[in-house]
Image (tube, rainbow, N blue to C red; front, side):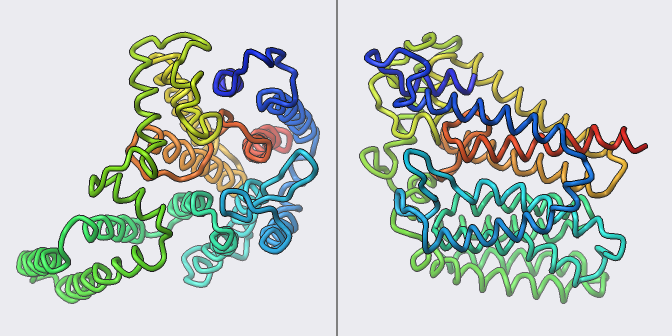
Amino acid sequence: MGWLSIYAAVYNEDHQSIFDTTQRYGKQLIWIGTSIVLIIAILFMSGRIFEVIAFPTYIASVILLALVLVAGKEISGARSWFSFGGFSLQPSEFAKFATALAVARYLSLSSVDFKKLSTKLISISLFAIPAVLIALQPDMGSVLVYAAFVFVLYREGLPGYLIFGGVWLAVLFILSLLFDNLNITIAISALTIILIFIFQKNKPFPLVAGLVGSASIGFVYTAGFIFNSILAPHQKSRFNILLGLEKDYSAAGYNTHQSLIAIGSGGFSGKGFLEGTQTKLDFVPEQDTDYIFCTVGEEWGFIGTTLVILLFIALFCRIIYKAERQKTAFSRIYGYAVASIIFIHFTINIGMAIGLLPVIGIPLPFFSYGGSSLWGFTILLFIFLKLDAYQWEIW
């Protein structure tokens, strides 16, 4: 279904052969063919090898992420690619499974105790290092993917209040864009006082509530600096459009607006394969990559989009189910990393296409055009499938 959507998005009546490698659907067939070779190679490997190569693979991926900053090709303002003739490779796509292997290997070591602060810090640094290098490209969409590892650490014992804290900061950041800082300060202060009064008999709570309230107020005033000084102008515009602070259907908001038109025009059952007018007339930029979901919506309608979403949900559930049944900590942790990475991609890409999230360049797994993406997700998923099969070979 992914390849069919790519074919529809870039279809040209003058190039009707599906094997035409001058067209993206022809190139994607090559990537699909090579991905099948990768699958066969992975399945013929010993499951034990992935624990052995985890750290070397991670180190190699970090080196590549550093090299691409100086020797990479700049595309759309980001130096994220190595170019080889007519093909390009994006190291950040391969860093995802390399980081998943490294985190799984480290946390599965018998000498590692996740209850220790040092263990938590090392675990975080393992995915923070590639995230920082990718941010320098800059490719903020790929950086967000590394938030997936927070779910992995939570499964292994990371306190839930840390995740709540991250969500709380995100809420405060959004509120600081919508309301005056003074009003937010008054609201936080009032909420803090009420909570202290209610739980005053719980001795540690008043102090903690006071500290959290003060830190929250401080962050609200810092959020403005982050928004105005760190985010690029186009990123600020995307946030403002998402929050309804401005409307721009000709520049920053154009892609999402056209995507919504395409999805809405598909109706319940869609217009049919190669019959989408938004698609055929190229109204939606990047429709074969970041906005591939709107191609599904226009040509296959509500039925098609629902099917895609249900298939992804089924995939998440199956991976988590399999992860919980693993007999080794390495396989379990890696399985959760696989599910979390694919989930982040799925959520952000579809959320962006339907206007619920800011526009961020991030592919829909196994659907969007791109060899690096397809190879990266293929390796990521099939390593786990091999690990799952390997456990029954050794037990």
